[in-house]
Length: 471
Image 1 (spheres, one colour):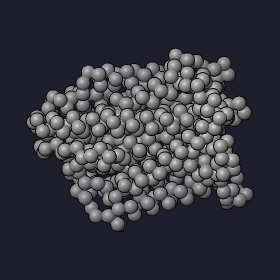
Image 2: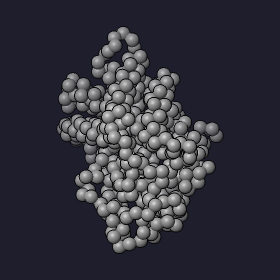
Image 3: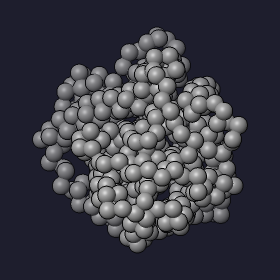
Image 4: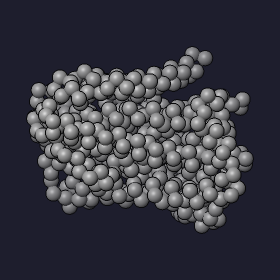
């Protein structure tokens, strides 16, 4: 880390000016686990597995914190950090991430199912083609936004805030319907008791990948958690204040993004400022997880009390359609319409967040690892990867139904946690102290938290391999 330049750690601005990364994190996270898979398990199997929700959600706290720590300390993206920790191993992780992100067009096609159910247009072409039509249309619209928005991050943040607030409002209105609210107590007893988890007698082994995806996506999920680094970076958190943002090549003014990051000395002022930045990181992280978990619990509860008694659950080309009953209970046909719109936004904005976040990650990996790549700007690599991802996700949407595409990435995400958490520990606990003051190093509680998270995901990964290949 000898190439890090020394600068003063910027002061922390008022916290309200830093609100944003948490909303993006929560909104992207809400795309599948929250809207599809946990309501699916509640609707199909009742309360049997719901005690997993809170552990699966909050075990991602320390992962997010350490991803954010590196960016706040250096201003660099996390993939640049992984290169510093072990370049060869980071190449292996990148290849796995590359495969994982070939399939996230499934979010757009899942959102397309809601829009086709809402409009019935185009007529007489069937659910598959109708859903794909809307998926391609929404991808086109959002892609135009990514290209023409002056500062890409600002577009993403505004859309995510709109989606979260509108959906939460509808869910809360339904929650307070008397016949729904009266069942909340029994749900809370299960949700706060992880020891209540059991496999239902009617368990279908085909749902095993769904369960892995639900656990991974109870928060962000695997490589998706690494995107948090880049939203913090464009927000100017910590030493990222010295980095420019990604701007539109058409409407925006180019900002300088340095080739390497920064460090700071052990001074009283830097120590004070770091305490402020780290306090912000923990608050933003906790807010993101809490907001996401609230939405997750609401959709799961409604799946339990509305869909489970009817024996209905999300599937096939109606994967985001049967949940419309969540709003229909309180608002009638208008509620159904509003939910289908919200569901489409929920899922397609996940595609948008992933297209942006993955492009940032891949551009960072390219920029950090290849000297010749640095002859071009970071913005060039961002838009090159964005174009590739738009193209390839448009192709993979044709391969299978939305659930299958989402599950491929979901299963990989569990293994991603197992593989990158040790590298994250090495980066922050072993390498950071060589160039930074001791107060920047993770405390023992953080190391224990990372170890518990890693052990949990390792156990889930081993269980999956055992029942899938060693029956």
